[in-house]
Each structure stands twice: as structure tokens, then as C-alpha cells.
Length: 300
Image (cartoon, rainbow, N blue to C red; front, side):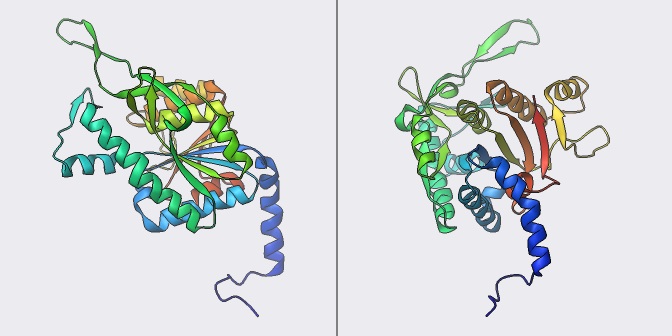
């Protein structure tokens, strides 16, 4: 009796699929893959389910999968609903005490538990955490400077409770990996001063991946990857090539901080970082388990 929900694939085709996929399954068996999840894919039900299926399959294939998520749009919506005005300095949101409480509520609460529930519904085993749990991530205030165009004097920007990671303790994550449980982590951490800090999700994911010595760090974005001067997707880049492209203005705009975050993760010990489009169905599996990949791989 044939399951009507299963595509009608000939035995030869099934064998070819298995033969093509097996080397990749062996390559990543027992390795750690960190996925930074957010953006458009998070708000799309179909893409969310496909993502959960990908993470579940990775775990079943022997991969230690770790998910770090963002939630900027959802934070903005909640702040608006609560009537809390956001102040921006040089394009960066100032996070005061009231704002950081909302950030933690949204990131470590509704968003985190929604992702956990979707992965569990797909047959996986996920638990929701933030950097504060088990003092996993310790942070300090993010230091940014700006130069006054008139006086040319450089001054430090006070962004409030916006932080950057200074230490990652991996013991909690190691325990979960042994139990084949997927950690879903919100980028909120305890400061060295005991306060709560909001951390950029890309930076947070890079710190986690570096501490775990991840084989791959995947950044799910809303673009296909890094493009060359002709607008063609680049499948691979070295750090040196990426830096040359930034200096030449080929990599520009919002892609610059993304690539710089990739380079920082590589310097922390990650083997390879991939920028790929999270709006592509099963982007994670396409990148890891096929010849064609799904984005731009940046390597040391």
C-alpha cells in the first residue's frame, strides 16, 4: 500500500538521492551547526515549519544543531503598543531600562517559545533559553564612537543596555547536545554589572558558534548571499577576498556589517560561515546536504 502523501519516486531516483546525500551526512555527523534565525522566515508560517523540519532532520542525522534568533520587528511592534518611544543615535537604538524589559519579554518569551513549539511539533526536541540561563553569556556595554562633523571631536555613544558578549560558557549547551536536544537561544545576557543587556543576534550567534567550535554558522537573511560587481552570487569567499571587496565598495550597505560579523566569527574559531536566503524553502538542508549549496560560504 502506497502512502498518498509520499512523492512517486522510482527506486533508481531514491538510490541516487541517498548516494548524493550520504557524503554530506557523514561530513556533518557529530559536528556543531549554529543557525541564526530571523527576518522574513520567522513571520511566515510555511517557512517556519520548513525551518523546524530542517533543524529536526539535522538532529536526527547526528548534527548538534543550535538556534539563535532575533526579533527586531516584533520588539518594535511591542514598544509601539506600550507607547514606549525609541531613540536612535547614529542608527542604533538606545535601550533604556523600560526598553530592555520589553526586549527580554519579547525575545525570551513569545518569540523563543514559538520557535521551540514549532520544532517540537516537527518531531524534534527543543528547549528555549537566553544567554542569562546558567550565566551562559556574560556581556558588557557596547562601545561605539561618533565624530562630530564640525569640531572633528570623537565622542562615545551611550546606548544604554545594549551589550556585546565578553564570555561564553558552553557547559549547558554541551549537556543538551549529549541528549540530542536543540537549544533555541534568545540574545539577551547578564552583564558583568549584573544588569540585563540586549545583544545583536548576529554578534550573539557568532560568539556562541566560536565557543562551540562550530563547523558551520548559517546566517538566514533576506538576500541570497554576497554578490560580485556584476550582481552574480558568489558561492565562496576567503576573508582576504571579502575585505578587498569591502574596501572596493563591492560589498556595501547592510551587507558590510553582516560580512564583518562573519569574519569575527571565523576569528573566534568557526570553520565556515554562510550567508543565505531564509525565504528559500529548506535553505538549511540545501546548503548543507547538496552540491549546489544555497548561499555564500566565507572561509578563513
